[in-house]
Length: 209
Ligand code: UP5
Ligand code: MG
Image (cartoon, rainbow, N blue to C red; front, side):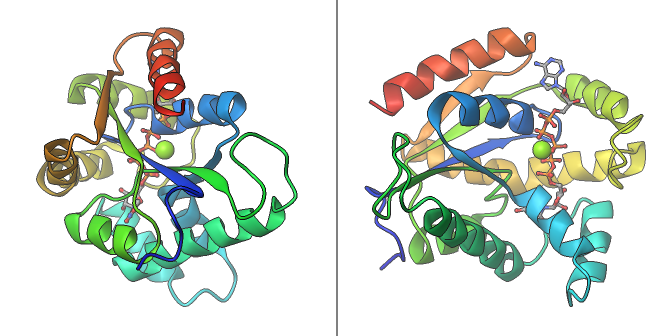
């Protein structure tokens, strides 16, 4: 049995290639729907920088190579973050919160089939998956531009190419698997940010009814 009941703890996986716009749109969904945004990449980068972390060096190497960090680490970080938010917001009167309830956007996870299975079995099954569709050409352009000031160790052409390869070979099969279960909401992420978000927002209004 999973730790949480999906009726109480609503999880939406937000997937899409590197630079597809996951973080950008999660920020807007937080504003409009009272979600807590948990970016697996951000949690890993924070753990990497935490003084005394036994995983810091390993995480840095995996991220630079665009490889997927062993799932035990990522799932533990996500589980802790969910538990902490539920504690912090136990008395919240926001929509979807209070009395052990909460709603979470899990951004950039699961990126490998075994992670999806393990998370849904142990933590909580996702309500649905938001998939942001974008061409590699456009994602490359966005990431190189962001790389001019992001300070991210993987926003350089060598790492970006490796991230794209991992996405195609390892992460797309996860999306395809969720598709066979009719759990995927696909949104074209190639237009300007406002247009893309408008379509995402409409889907969420329907899904969260
Ligand atoms: N932008 C966004 N949308 C735009 C639009 N419509 N028009 C014009 N510009 C747009 O956006 C990227 C850039 O594009 C921004 O400058 C934005 O303004 C612009 P962003 O919203 O940041 O895209 P996002 O999809 O979040 O891109 P990100 O680079 O974060 O995606 P990744 O999936 O590559 O990165 P993540 O942080 O999730 O993972 C990094 C690494 O961590 C992985 O490669 C892996 O090594 C490791 N990892 C794991 O090992 N396990 C995990 O479970 C997760 C990560
Ligand atoms: Mg991101």
